[in-house]
Length: 370
Ligand SMILES: Cc1cc2nc3c(=O)[nH]c(=O)nc-3n(C[C@H](O)[C@H](O)[C@H](O)COP(=O)(O)OP(=O)(O)OC[C@H]3O[C@@H](n4cnc5c(N)ncnc54)[C@H](O)[C@@H]3O)c2cc1C
Image 1 (cartoon, rainbow, N blue to C red):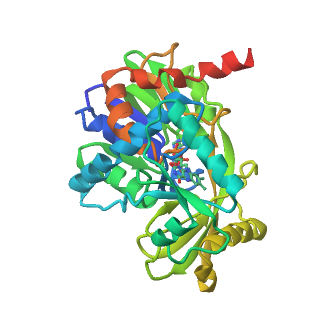
Image 2: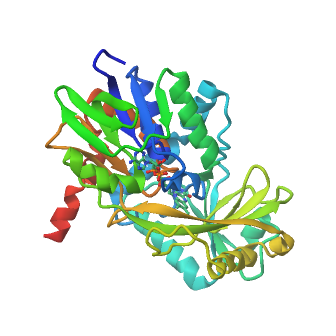
């Protein structure tokens, strides 16, 4: 921290804010991470934990390449967080399976792969027919006709990831301050003042990474964050013997042994609630894949809100009115955690966003509207 405050203040301590804050602090910048706490909507605590690359960003090459880069940097992220904190994020590059229940679905997946290769996305991916799939997953249900498989997909415990990012920031000298709801941010000479209930926090630069809370705060910095909620529900089973190591589109087994079935995509406004009908659908799909799970008890269902932009792509932006003020959001904050830590955080600490994200400004929505 300098005499006049921090080099960087990050508002919002979810996966995006925490990754950027840690990434900036690793370069030697003094960083404060302010987070509202458990009363806020927090996708980072309610997500499915996939680092999913196959089929990502089809037709959107910049996003596809950004995601591929993120996936390939994840090993470094997991290792560096472990070295810094001693915490195992649970990251496992087991490969990911997208299950198909008909030949038509398999054809659709083949089309996705062909399109992503046409865009220059060199992801390792293969198609498994039922016989090949059974070699991988002997318990596979009779309705599954095949799957696409990428050895590059992986999964992680999102809660350990968040904890590791926060701890690494603190261990490296950064300040993590939960329980602070930011309502006012003022540009001032030499930086920004963030009003908190216990006084102002000053920073030379600022990053708005408050998820759904960013929409309200962004205009104070001359930024635009047109984000909306999209609900996802996830069903959790009791712990069962380890039998399915893979990441997959509709279920995964955690390191502790629970299965997660998910996740739904629903327009439900700001309602984080759960519904039996949705949970039943998620269970039914999971049982088509692994019928042996029908005896497993369900212990929990939760709903959580994704942070969605109008076109589903990230927003990374610096304010043209108040240089030094940045905003960041995306709907795959687990997958992109590595690039937020290794690319976005250091770049913002140095004063400008990296060229790779130049096409992700919110100005694209004005152009689209015109
Ligand atoms: C059901 C579901 C499944 C998902 N599955 C995956 C997946 O498999 N893989 C993947 O990559 N992504 C997945 N995601 C998306 C991922 O969880 C999000 O992209 C990511 O968590 C977004 O992080 P964030 O930090 O922007 O938002 P959040 O987690 O919402 O964090 C925002 C933070 O800002 C704070 N905040 C808000 N307002 C204020 C304020 N005024 N002052 C101070 N602090 C404030 C909040 O307290 C919160 O901690 C999923 C999401 C959901 C809901």
